[in-house]
Amino acid sequence: MAIPFALQLYTVRDHLEKDFLETLKQVKAIGYNFVETAGFGGNTAAGARALMHSAGLTPISAHVGYPDVIGHPETVIDTASALGVSYVATGIFFEGGGAREDWAGAGRALDAAGARLRQAGIQLCYHNHAHEFIAFDGGYAYDLMMAAANPANLQAQIDTYWVKDAGLDPVAVINQYAGRCPLLHIKDMTAGTPHTFAEVGNGIIDWPPVFEAGKAAGAEWFIVEQDTCPADTLDSARISADYMRRAG
Image (cartoon, rainbow, N blue to C red; front, side, top):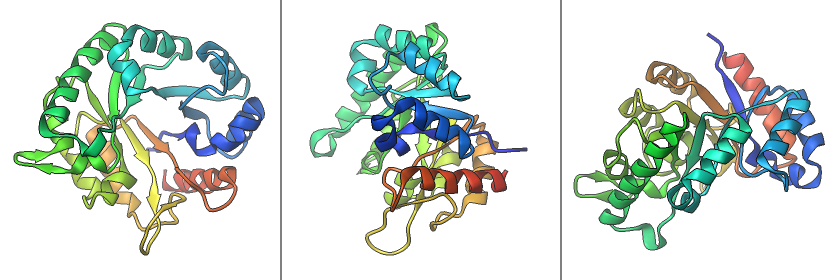
């Protein structure tokens, strides 16, 4: 089975800031048919969708801010509907890392927002970084947050790089959340210290077990992302796309 992969457009944000439509066309040319959004380059969501379609791309999910999800779910619903996506992902940063109750409270707030989004046919997912894996008695902050929400209202967008950066095994975390992680962020890591981001297949993450775990867990999309790139961001995105096609 071919791996259904997309590009998180944050990867090529420098090009998008200069020429949104031309960059979308180049994203298509280097091997992507599907994308996840993180902003619209000054366009409306509907306008961005039209530009994506004109470039031959289909948006499959969108990243949105935590305050918007919690405070303005109707606006998030409008954005997702204008994009034509059924998934939105968000994340949160607490100053100082957050206390146990901060994370449990965030889970309850995301549960309420996710219930409202689900009524509109939109699935809310949580995108992790490394800081969610601070430990409290009874588990990691991430687990406390996810346990505070109904899985139907809050699912996971597991980011492989940040899980590994936190010292955990991405396969183990994917397995733990089997049935609750429709989206995976596929992001590789350089060797050495300090490590940073690498093109998929050019780093130290062992991808075949990750892909197999993702498929077994019910992941629908494998979303390539590279926060920073050593050279041109489109070149890095192309290298990752080539690997994803070979892996499929």
